Every structure is written in structure tokens, then in C-alpha cells.
Amino acid sequence: MNPAARAVLFCLGGLSLMVALAAVAVRGIPTTPFLLLAAWALSRSSPRLHAWMQRHPRLGPLLRDIREGRGISLRLKLWALAAAWVMLGSAALWGTDVLWLRILLISLAILKTLLVGVVLPTTNRT
Image (cartoon, rainbow, N blue to C red; front, side, top):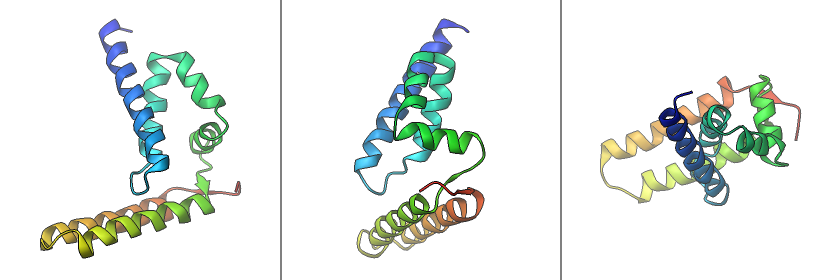
């Protein structure tokens, strides 16, 4: 791989991993998309960091379940949807008076509900 492309992917993977880890503590920021982006970018740029993610006790099982098509646990789905609706709903109701922004925020919550609830498979793992 081109060294410049590898460097860009490494930076993208590292930044995505940092955002994903921060999102664990800050509700409302989606964790899974950043985690998947980090896994993809690091698999191409840093086999060592990618292997660390796969072996991590919290991140590894989630990544394996998604990679193998099993999805995420029902408990995680419910937490993700509850957090999204609380954060986006609160922002829509009390965070703005702009109608189009309220519609956008509620639309994002509906989209997340459809993606997490319908598209992403549910695994039996708790």
C-alpha cells in the first residue's frame, strides 16, 4: 500500500477509535459507526492496533458479532435507541425553536430506530 494512503487510513482509524471510545462515556454520540470505521481503517493500516481492537474484552465481541452477521444484543439496541431518543428528542423540544432543525432531529431519531431496530440483526449474546 502507498505510504501516504496508509498514513491517512491510520489517522482516520485512530481518530475514529478515539471518538468511539469517547462516545462510550458521552451519551448521544453513536459509538458503533465510529468503531466500525476504525476497524476498517486500522485493518488496512495498522494490523497491530486492529488486532488489539479484536482482542479487547468490550470491543472485540461487538466487532466479531457485526463482522459475522450476528448483529448486536437486544440490550445494546435498547440502550442505543433510548439514548438517541432522549438526546435528539430533548434537543428537538428544548434545544431549538427552528422548525426545520426540529424536523431534522426527529428524522435522525426515526432513521436510527429503523437502522438499529430493523436493519441491524439482533444477536443472542447479552
